[in-house]
Length: 426
Image (tube, rainbow, N blue to C red):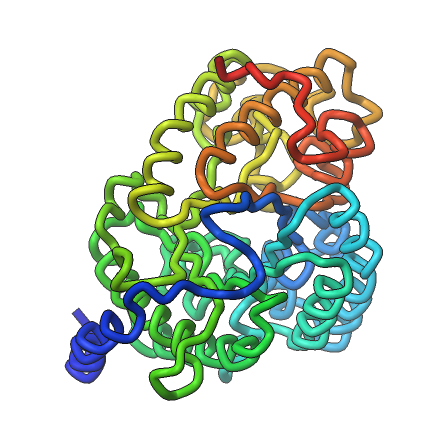
């Protein structure tokens, strides 16, 4: 175990200090978490690239080795990569998107950003330039009455090995090196300092997206220490006993809710929520489910989500989708096929991807009806916790995933609680 005695000692001191300061003192940031429901959408593929969201950015390079943001900078000239990214940042999301999100009755936006926006060490090929757009996002959110969640989506070494961490690798390295964790902690301190006096807009900081807890205690032990360190850094950003008002949103690390029972309990800890991501498409068994099974699986979570949010931490479903297949191009990674149509190595074919993804113009009326039913089953269920944030607002060619396309296509309502099927979960 690499955790230093210095860090252990600091945590023990903070454990003695925090409860006395925070007892019964709630956060005050302009949103009543736990009372008012979070209805939001993610701005995926903007400040952290994902090949399936913007496949044209990757295809235009003509290089099969370019599969994530790391290789986007590694295998083409810095000038070319920089020009492409600057054009993308300036156009993919603009203030009009924030206006449309607010007009759809949503109250939150979750914004993924990678560590490399602040810190690129020698040998790391990332291109910087994201921070001015983070500032724009804060302004635009404020202009349209939206609350912003700043989500650290990629950490040094990669916390999960997924391309959405910035670097697609076979095994995550974030937790294996104390320098990685220390660099990440330094960025959280910067984020907390940036937004400590803007908590009325940036209500929430999420210190790490989707850490790979499925690898077991090697990851989870390091992660829980990092959660405690992040709590202190976010909730006490002034360098004194004065507390801030930013909510701390911790990912469940792909563990059952029961794993987090008793973690950071109230009133000793205040202003903490748990983020869970709910997908039913990343295994052969899940994509093989019938439409009815997809809905039943989603609806069955309502009771546990409600009880956890009331008795433990506020529970926010920070990612979910009305898509029930993995058919979207590059969803499983650039150059990787889909389980649903059997093009993913080792997966049996369930059916054809035709009419399941891509442009909504290819969707049948019955498929749009199903998307609406599945969307509502999930929205109703996840509202039994503290609320939800759909992934994602837009994509180049995967309308089954996007809130923007769903609003236009009619499978997402113009108001997030305007249900056609209010009893779909019984």
